[in-house]
Length: 430
Image (cartoon, rainbow, N blue to C red; front, side):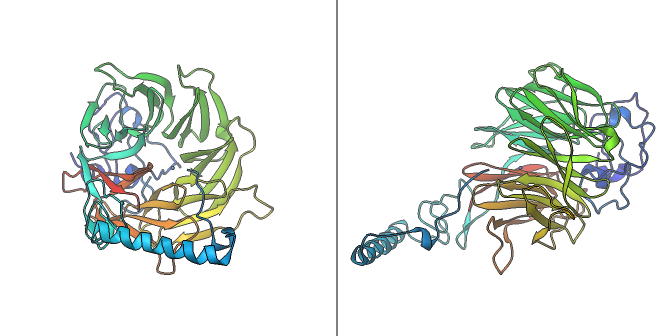
């Protein structure tokens, strides 16, 4: 079943439908929270957010030394060392050949495309694994990717190197899985259903044919989830709260953001002692202590979605159709009148997910589910060049989420309305 057939479908709460397909706008997470569907329950039927196709529903590092940071003992040594360095680079380039098309030396000597092609000195994205349509949120550990398969009610594990699909779990407590977090031996995800949603878990080795452990039941439209130490944190969009509990058994539940606060939290990020969340009710990005307390608004935009945080800045994707943006504010206490927002990139069609490493900011522009118009782009954390963001991959069939490790960037592909084309893409880091 394809999602286009179910834009106005409602199903009684008691019915659990494998492969149920919510409406397009709410698939990507934008929540119309003025009234919850009466019969949404077990199938997660979505309310529309005004536009069916318009609104899609996260490392430290150091920057390179600047010339002012480099000193030499004597001018003579400076010139000699610099000349030797240039000769070494030139010799290396001769030894590794043409760096414009060699996938083992793409753009520079020793830069491998990890299985992808090299075109004009840039590594190309390639399909690491083919999976069912509906690939949504993604998490990773050192060797595996973990993908929430929203359309087919499944959790998929993929080997990062070989692309082998290690397991597909479809047990009973996997129902409209959206976002996923992995730590140690556990994977934890949100089942994004109104009123009767849940936070569930399995070992990273897979559920083994058994039902997952339901850690939190009757969560009201849970979305972003993060595991940190012995605690887990999650956002309940319809419930209007951010909560924490013990990841071992779901006990010691604490409301970090009260349901009476007026927030409608969506995606989560974490840095140090704070949680950061996008808020879809009034279009805000908010920070709160991991132990609770006063939540503070850091910035606002029309349709905030994914959030990532560095020591210095908070970045988020604004998922407005066509005119989406990547936005940042300082990672600091807001003064009276709020923080000044900076547009990192504009014209990003349904910008939806963001990630960062020590050098660059990466993001997904989801585009539309009717055609392959999505893209993966990047800019240095120091700022985009005058020519604008670098497009790492284009013509993508509804990309949703991304993660970055020391070698590569990985992207989930949801797939289009009229094709069976769910996938996980991989591309070597620039």
